[in-house]
Length: 395
Image: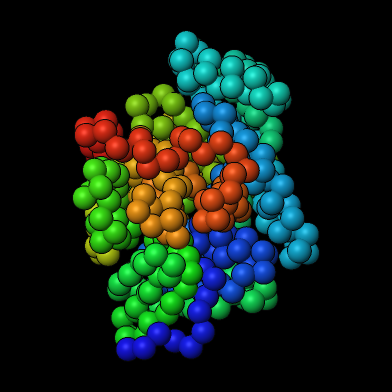
């Protein structure tokens, strides 16, 4: 079939937080942009959905701290445009045994970046945060600037903004083939339509692995394998007088187990969101959802131990895809053989908060400009040595 009339400056495949953020950035440059999404905005099949996501500074790598600061400013700009808030400040508590290395690492990073924090022992912690039970011989690092993003609302609002800014944003449009050339890219969808654009951004989340194969990364000696997991999360209702809403309760990351648990205070769903990070089953993105009863039981046990004023019986159980790179760092780079193709993948369960910054980075990569932060951690070259990085085995 002949390409649709007209040619776009950029085609973006995938309309989750990364794709829609990139569309907004490119439209802001005055470009003609086509955005193709297989489902609908904030759909529940992938990674960019739910009532809440953390945004935080407590990372071990400085680049993520810098990206978080830049993202906060972008989220504030979006709130001004919309005339309503898109996040609520909560602070965050990182919990661990007092001698745990993670506490020392986070303390050092926050101090080096000039960010406020407190290190709290059991008695002072209990007075500050009655929602949580800190074990004996454990401590917490509290960072007050963390917040909760209103995830579904953010994604839908960005779609509205993109369309207002002239993006040709199409839903329920499944891409089945990509044909990059020297100065153009042709995209075909399942209904037989074909579009042509000068540049392409691939931001397809859990479906990215098949496109990496189609674009020949293995043949170029790049073992950028991705492991997709379906992560379970559940919402636990309040069972006592202590408030657990965003603004009363902090975000929580708990490092008492090899795989950290997390809590997000109540936002829209009537319960505290909780899960165990990177413990989901390995799946294909289109596999049917199935509740992992052992995983759910582990999360319920965590709530029973750590949150004494919540019921251990969830009001809702949900799932979210993680698309994990071998080192859990992002992939934000140009295709080695096609300068007009940029790849965005491997967000490994911690990409949502950075949405606007990821859009800026990908736009810069698309035009071979200097990104707003140092992106050396996110390059494809780290997969260039045979066996250098292999995907970890996930439970």
